Length: 299
Length: 299
Image (tube, rainbow over all chains, first blue to last red; front, side):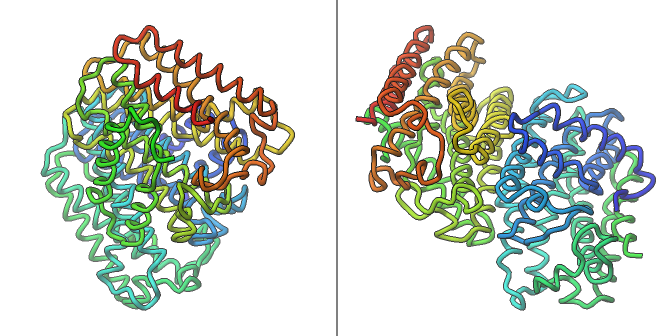
């Protein structure tokens, strides 16, 4: 589960190399905090959001340089903090993640709360520091604005809150979709928009609209597939607890639609994502690969 | 405890008015999250950091308009999130704050974690959105950079982590001071630097140096006085649990120095803060009032 798609290998390797250097460039003085931050951040993630950011930059013909690494790292920092906090006993209470004990198990709850908090701040710090390629203040501000909107109480945290307090049986398909559009969709969407802002000239409104259509479809597809895998896969393959949704009595696409219809829905969203790419000026192959991979990991 | 100093009343009232409008301008869809966010944010705080930001803007002769409200709000959002998370059972486990039950008591732990996360993201969102007065991208970026550095794993969170894991008896005065310089000092320092960036032209290096000297002295003074009040005051007056340091077996200025020497240290830091103001070009009376108030609330 550590590779998103083989053709994205070079970008994934470049990103992991960059990410591995980050904690040492921003060392915390408190050793336990620093170890836990490295532990949480440098696990074997699929790097979906960073690779979406890279692929979106390609799709709008941004220069083929390392500009994308900075927003990609910020996205992974936010995503990782959300996992660390979501796994806490007061939230989803998960002990296993990315093939290893979760941060509060490997360390402790206080450290996991603090690591999440530090990771979120670090995301905004890297966006405003000098990166590997000089960028304009306008680009940096667009990155910060996009990420803060997507991450907070009108985006990812809102969705997580809906998810935490959804009473089983009271959530219909519309509510489930709203929850996911916030919980995972907002950050996935931010990934493609931040990628578009890797252009030295601002992306056009049409480009943002197309990428947003793609991002929303891929974001939902990702979640539908996650729900399916939670039922059909095992903990070793997933790298996290399988069957966790049922154990937590969670409403999912599978519990609402059944397996066959959930699979069909994933296919429809894949088609929707691919259709959105047609008007983009650059190389859309990487975005297409990601959409395909997200659905095809089912098989 | 809701007023920092009478002469700062107008700025404090203007700030509270602005702060009260914030949650409705960024409404979360999930009602419980939104209520808890309002609850946490709109309690009766002293607004030390916002008023420091305002006072620093005056001291560097920034235009006397509402520019300061935006960085001031961001500072209060970060400060509030840190209180909500610090009060959690896995951290300081405090039930009482700002004269009311803490957020995880009034709501629940999951909500308190999420509210803290949302407040942090909101801080960066308000800094990059349009505020009451147009500002330059350079100003917005300086605010984001300063705040992210101060809030994260090299600033406030680092200090909180040192504090959480400090074994009683193993912390000497140097370690205590390092911890406080991170835990509360970093954000107080950010407050004056962000205030200086309310100027439409960048503050000079000398101004930043003077404000940083002031900020560091005031930040430590604030903590020394907090440690003294924890011993000498009561819960009603403090609005939070008195005697909490001793109950948690925490090393404090009082436990290391004793009360008389701690009082002297507060006085020295007050003098240091006031001395730092001499080279600043604008009206330094508000900064002087805050330094005086911080120490004089002892009496």
